[in-house]
Length: 231
Image (cartoon, rainbow, N blue to C red; front, side):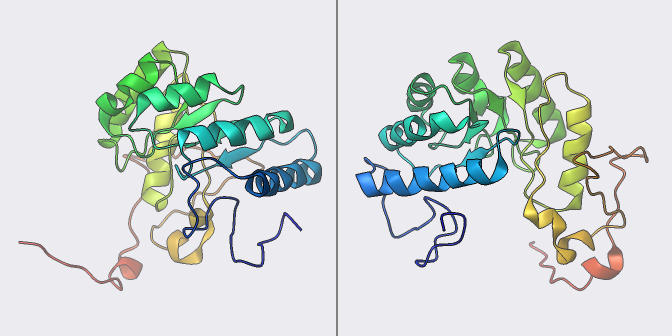
């Protein structure tokens, strides 16, 4: 069943680290990948959106191959098809498919986004506020993206503090598109780190209205974790 983890232990199409997908995909690899996307579309119906997350595991040519194979399944976003450092290659991928490209979690400061935006290689920018330079720099990236009609989905793969920071950013910009709700946000060990457990209801978040970010660390839980002081 393409919807289940396969017998080799791969939890998605291109996650097996022992294989090299940076060149050209072989026929069986393309068939496997397309079969899984087709199964998802059939199971979810036509009213659900599918984001294909590649984690930069493909090369330029293999990313184009796979995009062409799955275009017919109405993919909402093609996320990180290749590493964003080479903006020329990202532009080549973008111009070779009708699927909107999303990237940005590995791009830092507005300068890391400059060529991606000016070459109009991406449809969705995904700045991580914990990595891109903070809230102020993240806001500049969002405004920069808006000039090129590029929407924003803040990358959220951390804890409750990064979640509320993203929510505040997304409510303050005109080009917000969707919020990332990662599986980490549902883990008990993550949810107990802070005093407020913000979770979506019926597919929507409500941004906090308390002072600051509207979040505080749970000192009783945090003190159980190891702390290292670097001098």
